[in-house]
Image (tube, rainbow, N blue to C red):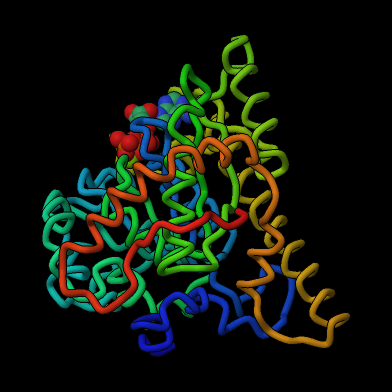
Length: 357
Ligand code: ATP
Ligand code: MG
C-alpha cells in the first residue's frame, strides 16, 4: 500500500491499513491485517501486560504478529525480552528520524511468528518534536503502511496519556482494545478516551472502531471486581470480552525474566486467560469477517472490510459516550490547540460531533 493512499488532505476518507487487502477470504483470513491499539490513559491498568501476552498468544497460534512498543517507558520492549544493548532503530527513529519499519523490527522474537518494534525513553521527545511536523498525527500510519500487509495482527502498546503519541497510534489503528482494571474508578476517564477516539475518527481515521474492552486484574472473590465487571458490561455490552484476565502473580513476575507468560509459566491462570482471550479475539474477528462477507454478497458490493468492521462495531457505550459528548468541548479545544501548532496541511484533530462507535 502506498502512503499517499492514507495521507494528505484526503486522509479523512482514508481506508484502514487492512481494508484494501480484504479480499473476502474467511477464517483467520491472512488477507486482512488487524491493527489494534491497546490504550487507556489511566496508568497501570494492564496495557503492556496485555500487549505482550496477547501478542505472544496470537503468535503461538501461528498468527503473524507485530508488537509495537508505543510507550517511552519501553516496558513492552523489555517484557518481551529485548535488552537495551540489542536495540537498533526504535519507534522514535521511525516517527522522527526517518528510519523505516522493515529495518527497525526485530524478527522472530521468542516465537517464529512474532516481530517487535521496540521503544526507549527517547520516544518521550517525539511528543514535542512531532508538533512541528508535517502530518504530525499520521506519522505512525505512514510508517506502518509498507509492512502492514505482512501481518495478521499488529498490536500497539500505548502510553498512559492522550497526547500526540497516542493519537498517532490511534490514527494508525483499525481498532482500539481497552484494558480496564477491575478496581476503584475503573470506568472514570473512559469518556475522555472515547472522546479522543471520536476526534481521531473525525479527522484522520474515520474507520477507527472499538474492538473491545478487556477486564484485567479480576478477582472473583471481591465484590468490587464483580461490580466493575458488571458496570463495564452494562456500559459496553458485548464489546466486553467474555474472558477476563485474573489477578495473577505469575503475570507480574514474567516481565522481569523478559518472557511472556506462556513461556514463563504456561499452566498459570494468567497464561490460560491470555490464550483464551486470543482465541476469543480470533473467533470474534472470524465471525465479523463472515458476517461482512454475507452482507457484501447480499448487497452485491465487494470489499470494504474496514467499513464493515466499523459498522459491526457500532452500538454500545451510550452512557459513557453521552458523558464524552458533555466533555467534548474542553478536550476538543486542547486537541484543536495542538492542531494549530504547526504547518501541517492535514486536517489534524478537529472537534466535531461524535459519530457512533
Ligand atoms: P502504564 O500505564 O504505566 O503503561 P500499563 O497499563 O501498561 O501501565 P502494566 O504495566 O501492564 O500496566 O501493569 C501494571 C502492573 O501490574 C505491572 O507491574 C504488571 O506486572 C502488573 N499486572 C498487570 N496485569 C496483572 C495481572 N493480571 N495480575 C497481576 N499483576 C498484573
Ligand atoms: Mg504500559
